[in-house]
Length: 107
Image 1: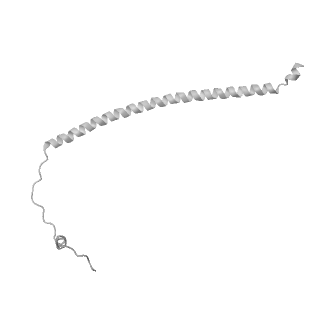
Image 2 (image 1 turned 90 degrees about the vertical axis):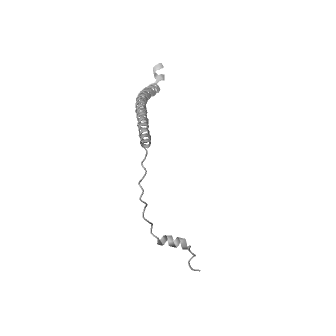
Image 3 (image 1 turned 90 degrees about the horizontal axis):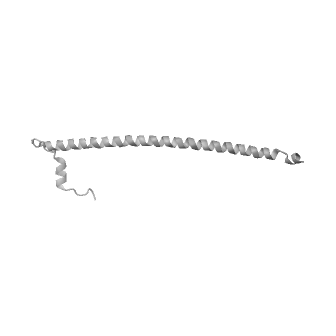
């Protein structure tokens, strides 16, 4: 009921320090991999150029839509102002008509 049994191999691995790395020269990367990377970068630049052009077009379209919305808002404000003025004049006319004693004028 003490410690669980450990294998001899695991304990000997812990006790050993790693050895030195072998003396091997690294392989050279072939030149074609640079061509692939360069091609990928050039395609990315082209894609980013297209994306920038589309974003600029979108900004222009949104700006023109904003101007159209401003025109519609001004027209609606003008119509609401005219309707309020006509409503006020109509209520004023009705009030004046009711205030005039029509029976006294007839007789």
